[in-house]
Length: 552
Image 1 (tube, one colour):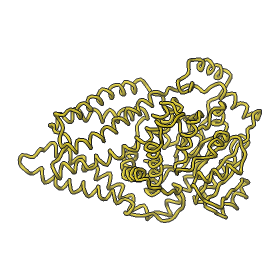
Image 2: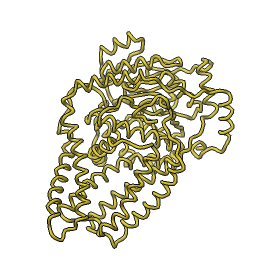
Image 3: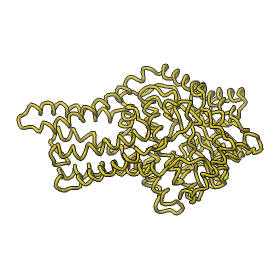
Image 4: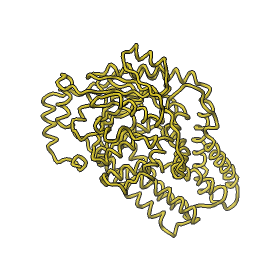
């Protein structure tokens, strides 16, 4: 299923890996080794310092690609355990009636959008109690909650951001299970019926479901939704195999007893979701990914909201990587340690992206190159590697949109800033991604992008002039010009988004309100009938040897 489209006909968030994908990965491994050996060959080394920088950047790229392939290929679709079906039937017939608190975290989001989530959460199947946790102190919201028949909580001291808001509610509620929803994520009517049975094992601390964005429109929203689709279709199913699924902050069910061991959500970081997951895994708890679309949300639709989200996620991932003590403290399996490391390594790719954006300019302006080889030799080693990386991704997710590439490159400077703030131990502030409806900053939001654009524009001008000179390396200059022009186009598109988006504040807000209504109005997928024959087949299939993760 394409989460950006949220096609109602298919609720599964993973795609079975076909034989062609595995063949492509095998070939990609070969060409990766071929390319790495070329980079390491002293015969082709150019400027030493630039070569070291490029080697580190390409090393991050190669490591991330190999690790992702390994994670993704470890996953094989398996039917649910028989206990899941049993729990679901008992929940449907009310033979099983656990106490459930549904917590909706709110911090200044427009009332019309919050109300859509409130009504959807209130109307979910399976008996539960719905609570609105208002950190925005809105009297209008309190009155609306009274009209809608849901509970409203407000705290007097607004410490520890979202985690503190949740923890304050945990002290005032008593449900055996706790569902956490963001204010702009609309649950399906059968959210509890589908997800809660995966908590049948008393050692499961939480069950995480995907995010989907059916109303994604425009560059930023589409790009953000597409990158999320790849994460939920490929990455989390693989992490599930290693018992390394981490909470993503919304659309998740926690066992209260597990949270009680931590005295609630982790509060020493604004990335409470991944840190809470680590602490639970260290204590022997398990986590589960439920590969069904059970909630739909609103993707960030402006650069400001997108950059806020990306900064917060990158900051948390770098905290885990650099200060998480993943290999010092006890409790995690080696697979879990490695999977948490990959969260930070993924954002290190942005450092590599920034390096690559400077390379054409360095060559065209100063004639300095990290590689000393003729163009044909370089292309023979370079092109197969990058083509295979793209091919494998296309095969695994059925293609991806150009907007995802543009937005990921646009977020690179934001990720680099997050890295430096973690290295310098500077505390990061927190605001909700889609809170508020006020004005947006303009070009000041993308000053690093403007600098990169100007550098590459200058390089294009110099490169075009160099083509007219006798004896110039025409092929090398042309390749550098092509890359510089690509970066100019991408950066220009990002800068244009920052400059023109603030002129459409009202249209953006109305579009978000309509998107929230659409998230609830769209029909939900019809779930597969769970007949006695299906359950019997499941029992037979699950009698096979289990994966290492399920035995941990």
